[in-house]
Structures are given as structure tokens and as C-alpha cells.
Image (cartoon, rainbow, N blue to C red; front, side, top):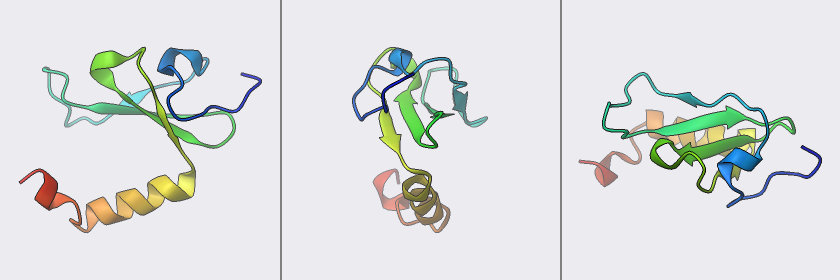
Length: 79
């Protein structure tokens, strides 16, 4: 991929990346998938819409989010 990936780019246009989803994902498709991009960013997509738009984050942005999730900062959104 010659151009830098951007938010909203179709997930299937990001080249040959390996998408990974949580082992806690359900058979009903309640999950998101992440992929490391060649430029160091991390893409996130809805597994039910694999060709849909991807959100692209820096490693630092995603690390900050994961740290907050581990601390339970977002639990109120799903309780």
C-alpha cells in the first residue's frame, strides 16, 4: 500500500493485513477485529461488515484506550 491508511477507508483496501478478533467474540458476530498496518498504525473494523470502513489509530492511541478499558473506565457503557 503506497498511501497512508486513513479513517473511513474501506477495510478491504488496506492491503494484505491479518485481522485478529478476541477469543471472547460470539458466533452472532458481536466483535471487532484489529490489524497491524505496515506504517505502524492499527486498524479496527466491524467483523460483521468486513469490507466496511476501518478506523485507524496510532499504537499510542490504542494503548491508551486499552489501558482505560482494563481499568474499567468504559464499563458503564455496557452495563
